[in-house]
Length: 480
Ligand code: NAD
Image (cartoon, rainbow, N blue to C red; front, side, top):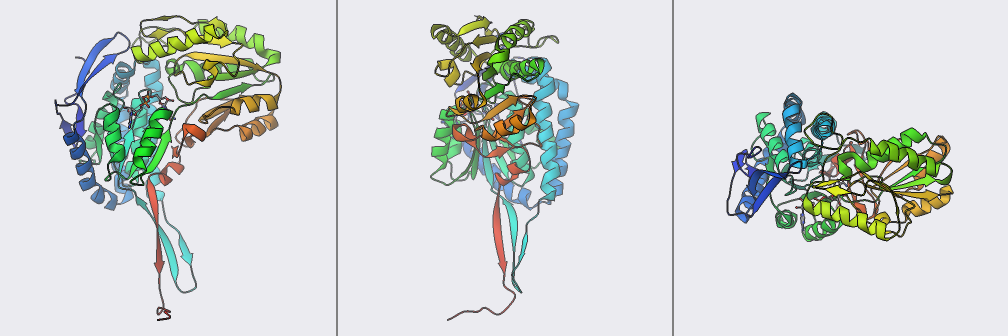
């Protein structure tokens, strides 16, 4: 099997196998070929992973931050040297076009590691003068953190979680999605090669129950989940009894509002990027595209033209811009939504067909707010276009959802752009751009889409805790 790793798990600095665990069959969505067979972590594997992380974390936390940074920076260099090999593996694991995995997945992960390696040594506390006495603060790691990943950006997610966690002195046990288990193992290998002590970054494979076991274990101080809202609720509940810190990066149904003064080509380009990249399997996608009535038909005509020109095919071929969905289950789910949209009276502009694991890039127009495709996260290449007349109306409709991950606005009117993003209920917003997530910018959600932030210096707050130190400099003034 062409992508078989040495073993299923990476624990305490080495590959580890336990064939007693449930079988995980890894398929390449491009062809359906089985490329690896792994086993889910048994209780024994989970316990070894957590124990080794607990044992290793204290001395990792005691190192000078710049020493930790040096190791992470070496890992970044290795990732960049092996960029092509890692992109190929990511394409095999996810079925995403090689064009994308070269540009987006590991490169974004490497950026995160580089950013937090640079940031961690600059973190300092504060001093509070108290007139003789004084106080100061220390920022401490939480301990052992669990990371649980989704399948759409497996290696990026592993990096986005491990970078702020490890740079600030935590250890991590990471559980990739069972659908895309391969990239995180490479990250674990690379960390060891870069000089990271064993036990600081462990990978355990598994289905939901392995994530649940991590979420409930009292030795885990924090859980960071990227996944769906229902899984988020379960993880949050499991983490509550032991008062774990929690970061939730969950699903969305994000609005993209296009006013009639916007650059049509840019707005269409962004709408396509925000619906068809990664075959639509992106949490922050702008799947409800509100277009102002004056440009509505022109928008649809040009959108159909440009969508029709998308090159779909073999993910490993250089020219391919659009690949299959991750699995048969996801394909069936997305095709089910396409059928529902037709049944509920949405106007099919292009796409709508499916073959193998490929769903053609699909656009529905005249979508109304109550249609199923306007309310539920599809996680596939299905764009809903909804006409609107006035700004207030667009805002009310855009915000009428349980989700609050992302939102975008296209307009040439600067005042309106800022007014609109201020009113949008979303954690991450774009003006005249969409779905760009540089590491410098906080990424996260409001409402049911989650809480906590990844990327930027704000992520540090979610992987550290503050200690206050009061220093008495004079005789104790006690009434007793
Ligand atoms: P999912 O919720 O099915 O699974 C996510 C992860 O949680 C997997 O590793 C899974 O094994 C694990 N899991 C399942 N049940 C669990 C439980 N009870 N306890 C602990 N862990 C459990 O999501 P998915 O289908 O893998 O990914 C798609 C979803 O992820 C979409 O909703 C998408 O929007 C979301 N997502 C969000 C972001 C973000 O940053 N906000 C990014 C990518 C994907």
